Length: 75
Image 1 (cartoon, one colour):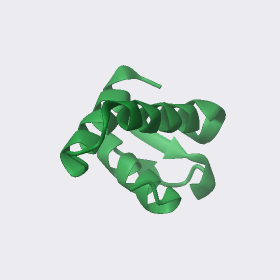
Image 2 (cartoon, rainbow, N blue to C red):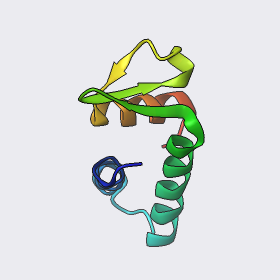
Image 3 (tube, rainbow, N blue to C red):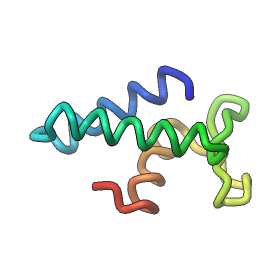
Image 4 (tube, rainbow, N blue to C red):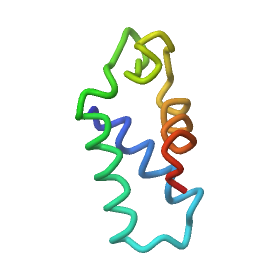
């Protein structure tokens, strides 16, 4: 996973769940990173594509994070 996507997700967590402990925050970032690195997401042109959409939907970093949170009920 590229560092920009990881930082965007980390910032999202701090902004949405401000009272999260550092331990929980790091765990959630690790789980997201594992999901991305497990072949579920590929960088594509100037965005990302995702496996469960059968690689048909293109995401920005922000829309990918929102998709992940909605689909996997993260928060």
